Amino acid sequence: MQKKRLEYFASARRDLRRIAEYYIEVAGTDVTARIGREIGNAILQITEQPEIGRKLESAPYRQLVVSQYPFVILYRLSPAAVSIIRVLHQAQKKPR
Image (cartoon, rainbow, N blue to C red):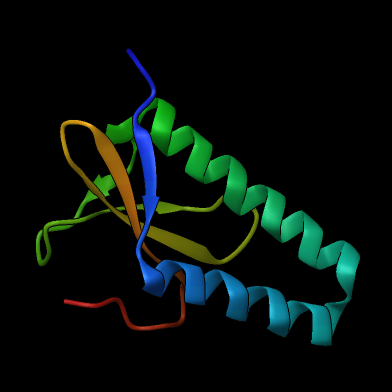
């Protein structure tokens, strides 16, 4: 299967920036880099295996839980692309 093009919603870019800012402040750059790598690996996995995430019943999205860290990636599939919609801490409410 061919890897899909990757797109980020502005909300996902904002989420990633906020995650980095928060973890740099409370845990330092090493922890922040590890979290960034894990999120990046999960997104790469989504582009290679787009249906890996669980389909949500309440929204036209899929979600993938980031292993080792408490984050969820919400994304949408189209024939040509994977669109990353949000990257949320699991304690945050998911959009409906």
